[in-house]
Length: 233
Image (cartoon, rainbow, N blue to C red; front, side, top):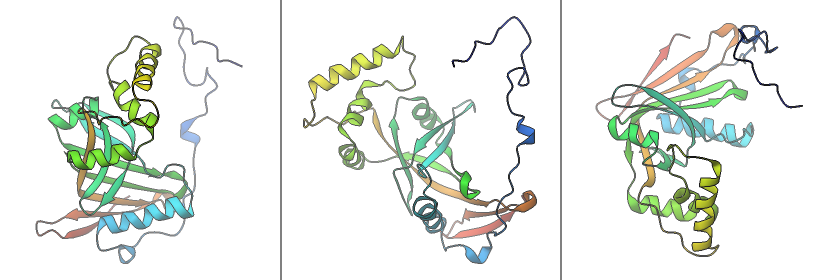
């Protein structure tokens, strides 16, 4: 049954819409914790451990989905979900339209936060660092690995721009599909590519009973090493 529209001429609150009370929502997190002795030598090695568990043991849906938070030159924040496509000791890589909101934000202010919310495991990982564009060769290699439709989509969508209707995007895609049918090589858009986030801090959060969570944070040192800090929950 379709939802009835909310009337704008009367006061409406969450109870009027029979919404659940968020203050009453409570989950008891796992008892086993995260100790300093459990950690790998680097945050990327530790991330690889947890990522493998999220993907192969917990079978989470899209464990590479992360919330990317940016801020523009005036400090105005924005967040969105993006898919992680690569990680190694040099950083965490995602791809996007450079003319999108996040692209403009990162051009003005390269400081960024990545959040991996692995709720079913009562875990999250927060990466803070500096984003830099990947090289064009690296971008082209990844672009060629994408499905044909996704390659066309990178051209069809002027990401984050205001459009008149869905039909505008569909028409642009149909035109590109006719120009570059399946099997035809799609050129790499000059306005599209990757960002690599070089981590400066990486926090591993493990939910514990009574909200006394474990929070261990790697902090980059000047000599290239890492210092581990425990944060109060």
